[in-house]
Amino acid sequence: MRFPALEPRRPREPIGPLVDIVFLLLVFFLLAGTLEPAPPFTVAPPVAESSEAPADGALRVALARDGRIAFEGRLVTPDELARAVDRRLAETQATPVLQIEADGAVATRDLLALLARLARTDASHLELVTLPREPNQ
Amino acid sequence: MRLEPLPRRRHGLRLAPLVDVVFLLLIFFMLVARLEAPRTLAMTPPSGDGTLTGAVLLRIDRAARLDLNGTRIGLAQLPERLAPYLERQPRPPVVVQAAPDLPLQQLVDVLDRLAASGVAKPLLIEHGASRP
Image (cartoon, each protein chain N blue to C red):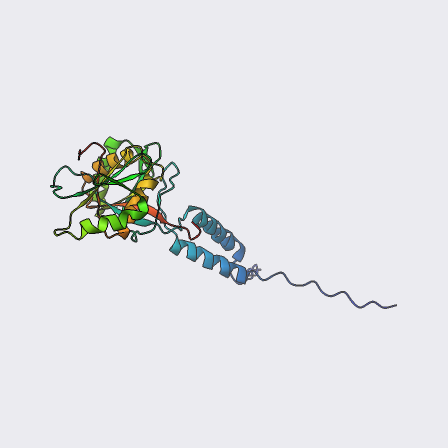
């Protein structure tokens, strides 16, 4: 009895299309994502309906719910903050816009104290970072 | 004299190491990149100068109850109660005085309502900074 010859093994899965997709994903994340130093604590910004698109190239100050302050990813004391902001604005010629990334549970007292300090820096404009309201809320 | 034959040229780049590196880069950027698009609200810091003649005072207590020039109102009523003041000439500034313990989200809800009623830049002042 004769059996048909076994089929030769299939060649390996071509890797080219896979590489193409991975390249596309890489380019997507390079373009769509922004690389910024994250504060050393978690911040959940408040939700707001009517808010404007943020300015480009703004400096960010983060305020944790327990009152800690971070600037460019580093914890700073309130006294260091104004100096650090002014130094950064002077050396980068950045847009003098400061964004405050505050937690939604921060006490108003802490926010007002931070605003008062930042008002004495060279920043011309202060903004509060908010998140758009989710449709199901 | 015998010469070694030249080694045969390998045709094409080896793809596997390249793919490895690209994968690593992809994972790096996926983990590090922040994709969410935040929005912002303009903030006007408390300032000592400037007169607040004829200003409208909106107070928020620690339970997020509103008080417009001494009258208790609800958040939903804010635009209609504020409208008569905003029609005055010159347009009065709106001063927001929030309780020190008020969570920021509650303050932002009120600022949101104010922005929807056309008050783009309310003045934030500290509790006890002015006594009506």
